[in-house]
Amino acid sequence: MEDRLPPTEARQLEWGEIALEIEQVADLASLAHDSVRRGIDPYWAYLWPSAHALMDALARLAQQLVPEPPHRAFVGRRVLDLGCGPGGTGVLAGVLGATVTLADRRPEALALAGRNAARNGVDATTVLLDWDDPPPEGFGPFDAILAADVLYGDGMLRGVLRFIKAHLTPTGRAVIADPMRVEPAGVTGAGRLLGLEVQTHVARPGQTHTGGVTLYTVSSR
Image 1: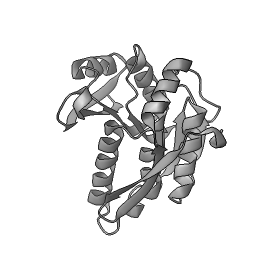
Image 2: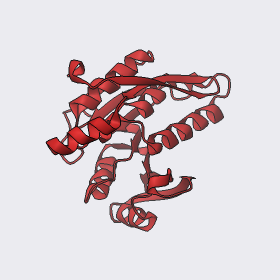
Image 3: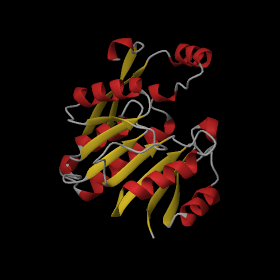
Image 4: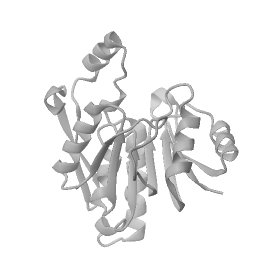
């Protein structure tokens, strides 16, 4: 699958002592046009504002936990990057010491995410996964589940929250980064129905098409 990836470009991302190099598809407009023609989505190919906001939050947390240096802040933690796309969030967690699983329903995404993990020296597991289907045997649980921009279609909110409830450790946390597509009251309400606690934080003010991002931290009640 990797040899069928569109041309990519590498982006340098830095948070003080923490640095990554992440590849994403170079010509997103052409990919989007081809995806519409084929009836599939192009969202896997790019680090969207939600991913950047989630990565910023992860890097800040690591710097707070282990200021000098932060690269071992998450040692011993099992982290799932759900709907990983290029894998930026999961790769960052791996650089910070976590044991990482990169999961997506698109094989192209896993090929790109795996390449990004190797590029940054992260030994990550890649899993082809749709959160609405049963995962492979022995999958999870995880101390943290990270998901950026996974609520772009009808019915996705409940599916993602059900998956989180089933695969998060009792003391674990999940963080969903959303570009203000869904209403916070809808997320907290859906979580409550599933026995989950949801905390809301506006990471980047704005709207869906101007870079606004809300972070939802999810835990067991």
